[in-house]
Length: 357
Picture (tube, rainbow, N blue to C red):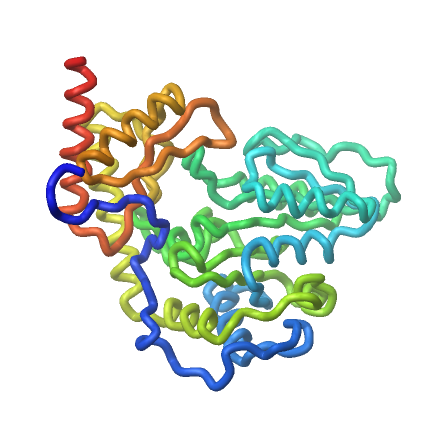
């Protein structure tokens, strides 16, 4: 590695730079309950769920062990036999796994082109009471765009179904924007688009922006009550630990978060402008994963390797929604301007070396 100082790391998705050392967390009397979540959860679980629901003006919320645990519960508990799951073909793999697990229960699963839902709901041979649930990620890093959530809500409402959104990537970053020129309040992609949470079962992990491996599901009160009573993982898995919950509450209550998010916006905008100045075409809208499209995975890995030898760690991403590969740098609020300068200088050097080769 060139130089003697530490690498500039642009691979971590801890967007707000929160790390939660143990000494910073509230103490706990018991680390876990020793019983399934359906029987008893620690009081902090209700506090965490309530805080997220309040930020979205959602009716109710429930904590889950992880995004996978939560999505499995949603898709195993809510659609009935004969219902239809319309799934975005670019959805995150864990969402597709959870959808496939619904098939043995008599739920139909059909995919639609990425962020291009059908104009009308496909006809069904099932009873007229069958509902359609539209399943999507809130934000796609492959194309740097939000899901067409307003249209999805319209389609789901036609049959009494709902939209199921995994917003784990955007939660804590995007949210309601009082004015243009910011990421918003972190409450998620729906409010970033100016939409309410009615007709939506929303799931977001705190593992990225907030640095806490726990997830929250929000929705209307009957839906959340059903999940609390019938979620398979809640009956067979332990609830989140006291440490997870303490870190989650600490992250949400951190008074620095608005400033951290503002700093994250500024650093992201600066780096996007620097990419453009180097002739590296940007992917999508402003988001703290700043990527440029490469013609192939091989080319992207060549750039990645050349940057690594210069003490800069980046990512090679293979999008589910488009061919080729992305060379990406993940911006965090705890990056310094020196870190970003090192990245840009390394990109400039690699670009110069490739032109000279």
